[in-house]
Length: 116
Image 1 (tube, helix red, strand yellow):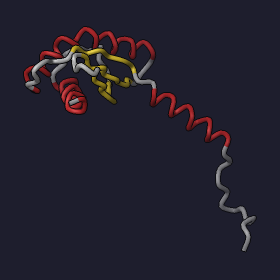
Image 2 (image 1 turned 90 degrees about the vertical axis):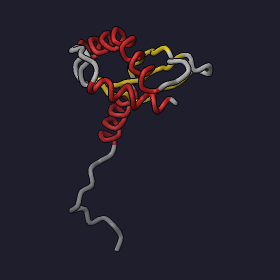
Image 3 (image 1 turned 135 degrees about the vertical axis):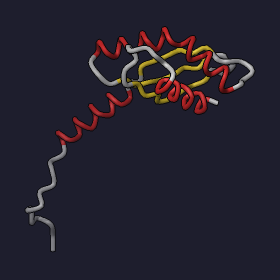
């Protein structure tokens, strides 16, 4: 159910939402509460911090439209309430990768120190 909701929200953001504040947003994950009444929608947004804040505000204010779309297309008994959370996982992964790159020396093809 969560993955279906994730896919539908992503499609709707591409084609259905007419809010300019919602920039380049990617829905990364949806987690359902145990009672299936609430969907926690995790997303990433590229751009400056101000653009991210605008995207968050746009998502929050468009949540009723997104929920109405889900109700029409998915035909669940109950359409869950949507809560949007910015997913900082990609940022953390990038920072860790960058730090590891600084610690690991680059491979030197001219290095003849390997045993023969």
